[in-house]
Image (tube, rainbow, N blue to C red; front, side):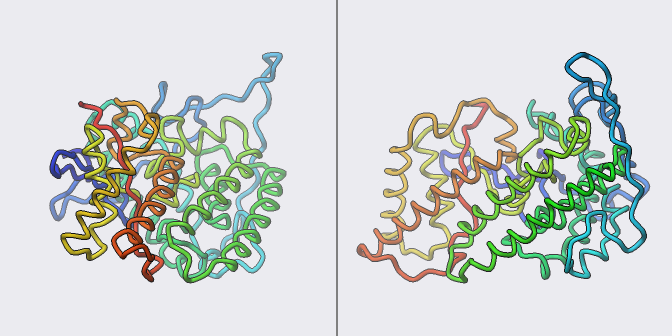
Length: 382
């Protein structure tokens, strides 16, 4: 079994269901009593010269950037760590639970996690098993990060549990703490700029959430939150050197579900479930199963819904599914923009299906009637 990615065959479609929830995906099923101990955790590596997991030292090593003339540019002079009980990036009115986070420990956990996720991404890209020791370390660090984030779910607006980790108030402090732990801390000027942007993003986020309605579909709120976070993270990263950016994510893992804790894609970490298909017919089977299985439809209406979904799949342009052969997608580590594409399609199609099976009138449904989108990728082995 590759990681905790469950592979099952449903009809003619090979369906890969990514483990959802706060126990993130890249773990093997372990017998009781085999959990890694704290001593097995790597320390946060610093100074990455190459993207983690992409050549050279897998934990990273480092050099200063060079100017266009080839001269070495000095790296920013790291600012001193904040006092105990203080945030790296102060947020006016920050909830006590955010201030109470042990940011030294959080930075060390995230700093050690980044190169491990790059290793997982590289292995998944080549259809390789995730090494047991890597899987155990990732699982343990993920659990610790989730345990810290859990109380924040009550005080920082979020759509899904892991969404809290991408909230601008949390993300800005996590960026600063992680870079400090990896030996490439932000300068006083960078921290000041990050503070200005984080506070503006925090204000914008609160205003956006206040405009949402309880009747809005949950997945549509998630899309809106994801798109806001894309801008937040882009604004934050404008302040960083290339070396610092590499300290947060490797190219092979960047913007991929489950593999990039410093991107908007975190929004989808707990809900993106990926199915594999070998042809258009099996795409329709997988999509219909995902969209209709929780609707409580009788056999006749389910068949009508399946036929409707199949027709909509047949209408998709050839480029919709992309090219075959991407193992990293088949493992469930799809890009965030792919999740958005399938989520919009899933909501649109489900609305039409519900109207179709209900005689042309859309019945009243709960905002979370669809808890996750249909996401289908080609089976790279076929």
